[in-house]
Image 1 (cartoon, rainbow, N blue to C red):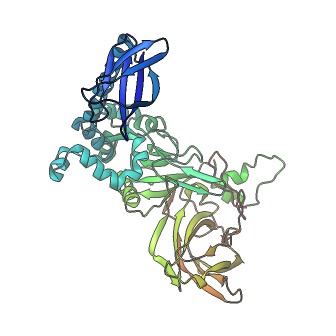
Image 2: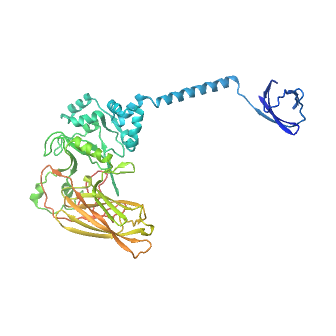
Image 3: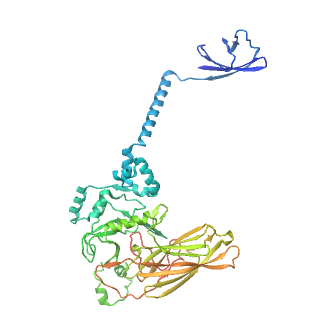
Length: 502
């Protein structure tokens, strides 16, 4: 135990402060606190300390007061333990600091996430750590997707898969899977998402083992290997490993079950099937016709075009998910201070060929210029659509607001929304305008143009090559839908069936 005494003494008109430490054994530790040197002598009488100061001819007039502070010092074993712990923490900290700049660690990260090689490092002339930081600044927003990728497979594993399925894998597919063996089955998936009302799709890039387990040999899907899968809709993209059933080798497509079968399998024995000509019905037996929506000529073109769209920002990233909206740079229109741009997407899982029912979603961005005057603030009142199908038939749609909202636009504000529509022809386009009123004067009404945007169904293939004589050419704008329902259609159930056209 130590006792600390701060002694306040007076020499003439000056106050002098002396700090004295006395151990429990009576040993003296003296800390000088002024330029006048004192040689204190301390005696202990019960709880009273008497201080005697002398320094030659210098004397102290009087002691003003004494403040006492007691404190403890750990014993030797505890002090030694604390010292060892401090040394260990210092050593660990130094080693961690060294590891943060350890080249092999950053080299592995660069190879795993950015696919960099020694040649890339030599060309840039920087350390692996700096190289990783440069690429992270550019592509770091995608690191969560990279993190779900699996390590590449060996040549022997790919050879084993070929023996298992009895078919050769394309070399570009093998090359890609040597680098990364698909991804972990997580949500959101690497190959894009789509969310609309109560419908959600997110595609995972399958690893080679899972893909081999889903290898198809049934009629209409012979020698087809799945590349992606969505747990919510059951949708998959397949690659044809041989030229058969009207497909060419390496062709990639979405498989869509024919809805004509469902028109007869109603699940209710009392409900009668639609009345059709008997010979037409017999042409569809045994009701297992499949339709394929084309998505790529080969693996390289399919994969690299998708990556290019992601990296260049063509596919927007919304809430950390990649959405496969396609934006035509010509689909932009500016009226005064307000700019409207449109991007579209085709949803194969909600589409069918028989009956012809092609489902599209579009995302519209309404932006008011930052330079706009505050008095130009306005509110959207209504919309007008002019819809033209491939046969030249025109339909006009008017309605209040957009998807139940009436956005207020002020300088610099952006409003985005997604809606959907269905067509019975393979290509159609929409255009129109929004009607706004100014907030300061509701009678000041004006129109804002919506640019023309085209929606084109991808090429599709019917295994039986049978066409049905359907004549319904109606389309519908569905800006009026509310959460959980859509006008004029049935959404896909969790099993992934296409909506039935009634």
